[in-house]
Image (cartoon, rainbow over all chains, first blue to last red):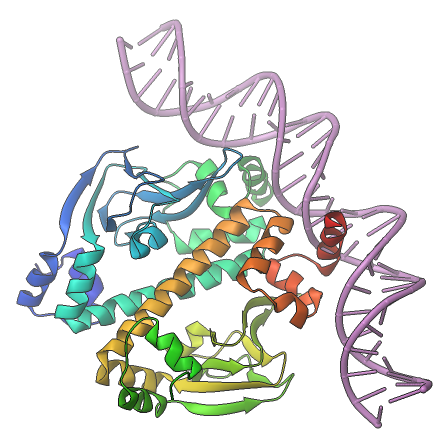
Length: 191
Length: 191
DNA sequence: GGCCCAACAGGACATATGTCAAAGATTTGC
DNA sequence: GCAAATCTTTGACATATGTCCTGTTGGGCC
């Protein structure tokens, strides 16, 4: 149990005994997904929040013009779901799928609330994680407000080191909010 | 105490007795600011999170080219601060100021944590509010990814009804990430 | 080895948005 | 009520990015 990635993440914020971590883990289910597998379809209820053990997932939206927009990537130790659909238990407007074979731990909203209640420091953990997520999104918005595509690209490199090697550039472009052609031109200028 | 705006907001999420609300309120300080007053200077520590009672505040950043970018407006019943500086107790990279005479309740991080600890349902409240904030930021990012300035403008109208009448259009433009000239041209097309 | 298909780079042109400058319009302060 | 300051609109032009298209590359697969 020592060295479990979930435990490591929790213990960066609150300390757990071995028994407590076993108890925490009982609220999760282990999941195995194949590359290209869709984990949450648009229009379905988002029953789970996922903690990625290994592999790579993403959350995206298809707009009315048939274009795909990537909201988030989820690498090892990231949490990923359609947050709105999950927390409000409504139908998802986003799609979650796997860019690689992926192992994850799934958590239902019911279990998340149960866990928060039974072990208050877990609520503390969730609050801290959500706050950090909120701050990260604020930074991303500031990046949209103040930076051109080139600066946003370099910002991405620093947030997701190693991502560039794992996903097609067209997806990087989609995350940045530009076309793949624009991203390609930026790369040329760099050289 | 019934009908207090803060109490109303909390009770949308968790119920409080009169005594509990009095206890909650003891953790806040009442603040009065003048229009144009700077509440948090860039480079200062963010000692407070503010709950706006009336008036209008904003959070913004000055980039290296001397341009101002507005991250958030805070109208009645909104919470506002430099979230990163507040939660990590580090120097602020953002500025908080008032666009109107403003009354607010201020909360230190210490009191926020004390309150969360002494009255666990308040932690529940903070978690829910933060989660909602996170979801709202995700939507704003999706808006940047998939919408042009015109769509973002109409999105803003729906999120902050009444804001248009209260702030200069140049600030609306800054929030949307376009120049005031572009926003002005959009308005013309509408008519 | 040869064939697909996905990914990528690049050119030519279209469009949205930015920049700069100036003129009106509105608000603010005295 | 007037003068100053702020805010908004508009035009001409520059730039960044989008769109459409074509050709190349390289890996997976039979």
